[in-house]
Image (cartoon, rainbow, N blue to C red; front, top):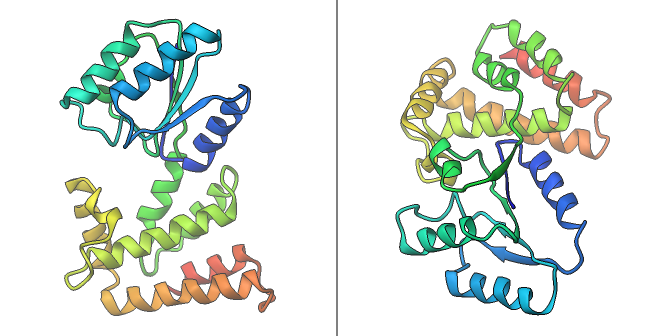
Length: 229
């Protein structure tokens, strides 16, 4: 059987993946960006000769390998034709329908962030008090520390897509055109100078909260940050 664990919530998907992997003794684990057909074939066929245990875990193969490459086609065709093997893929992002459809008889385990997270991040702009309410609603489904991480990431992206911002960070390279356009529109509410100040403020918030140098909780610090925009 083939299982694919994927989605934008890497923390939950990775936890599920590790928990699944730990159920088996001495599983074979491969880096999907380096694995080749011959290695996989020898591993699975060799295991089948000496043991009934055929558990293989492959990380970041589907999303990082070109689907039109011979290596990808060979591996997919081989796995689809062998139902006796237990193959688990873990991908650090959500796969497209086309990527997932390449495999037959597959069990898809999708772990995505709640939609309200993206509504919250998109709502952040000066003098928009509704973002505070969205932040507190979001806390019902996500840990404050993770929300803070995504908030920092959002401002890093906003800074990166400004006219003089660095376009070379890995995260901006992976953005779709519509995502980049949305970020540019949001960045215009701030301007580069204000974005830089906000980003520096995150560092201070994180440092003071982590080392107990403030009486404010992380929740209160984020509240004040959003109100002060």
